[in-house]
Length: 223
Image (cartoon, rainbow, N blue to C red; front, side, top):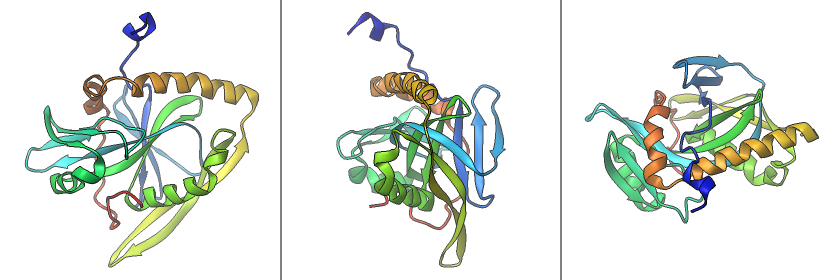
């Protein structure tokens, strides 16, 4: 361990936790310091820093949040899923998937990004996650050089349930100043995500924001 590692912060560097609201066709940003949520109209433009995954939900029986550490490789890294202070599942997502869903939780992608000069964490689940996954497969080679813009929404339907998913597009190429700012912010995010699971999860319960009802799509990996 280096001296720098000894004193690094284990606090999530994201100032806002951003989620897609299907019914409202826009994003909501939860300010963790002010403890208030604000609607973010489209277009919504951001610069990707790092992409992770986690589990989130709510247990009706325990009346408590379900949460996990954030991982960057779902095939190689273990999730530690907790409800309150108790670990309810641990392991690779595919191995614990049934336990997670039965408990009332879902898999989601967490994108650490710069938005208006601040670090935010943007979370997608269900049908919105599927749209993001398809977009990322096509344009991942541009994530270092270009901004990403959610320009609108697209209506979908599963059975009798209607829902709206975000429409992603590549934005402008980053200026030198914007690229430098992203590199500096990346270091903060990487430091947080490299913390041991026990230390990282200590901050996750604070990060919890209310979970929307299922939008009708499967709460699972989109592949």
